[in-house]
Length: 208
Image (cartoon, rainbow, N blue to C red):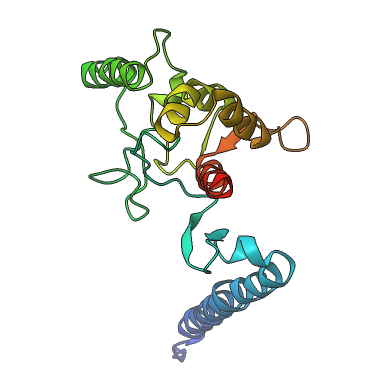
């Protein structure tokens, strides 16, 4: 005599249990780390570092936003200090298309472009010495707001001539805007191009 055994539903119930647990964990993770955590960090940043959280925006005397201290922009006129070349976007300094050239060091295109840029910068600044490399090569993001003190000094003669200022006066402004290494050992000394150019405009207005 054989005894029939009722089919078990344990495996099916176990699968549904696992699926339900996974779904609950997914929802909880999205809510905590996708909504609550970013909101809390944003609020804390706004309270402790309001300027940085707001984009480190720089405004003129009339309250108009002229740029950000952490994002480079194009300066092409001779009376302004120029920043690093930018490969971000078609015309450079495009915050929606940040990035470098992505060309290898052995790329003929990169080598030829750099040589042409060096010649152009030397001619533009009436200098016989080769310019610092960060003045003729783009950064990884294409939005670098800073140049080295050497790159700023390389442009003093041109800027002073274009503004009819003494080179000593322009050199003093450059020296005043050199930011040292963070905490004394992180990074390299640097000059914010936008802030230096704004100081130049203010100096000119003060002279008038």
